[in-house]
Amino acid sequence: MPLYVNNLDSINPSGGVVSMNAPLKQSRADVLNRLYDMKRKQLAQASQQGNSLRCQVLEAEAEAISNALKTVR
Image 1 (cartoon, rainbow, N blue to C red):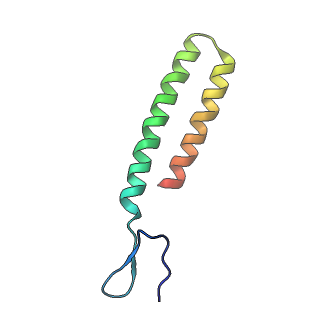
Image 2 (spheres, helix red, strand yellow; image 1 turned 45 degrees about the horizontal axis):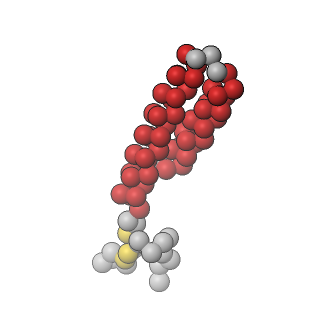
């Protein structure tokens, strides 16, 4: 009997596990992409304002989002 990765998986007619995660991964990637774009815009604004501490925080947040995107793809 195949092991299920999660409750969204199912068994195809040949007995293999069919993952239903592809749409979820795409949705998560879309959200992360939007978050990353917003964070980069915030970083550009903070940079123009000369707020170096805020830039450091925003850069760290953008990097974390980027790393999350890499795990989704």
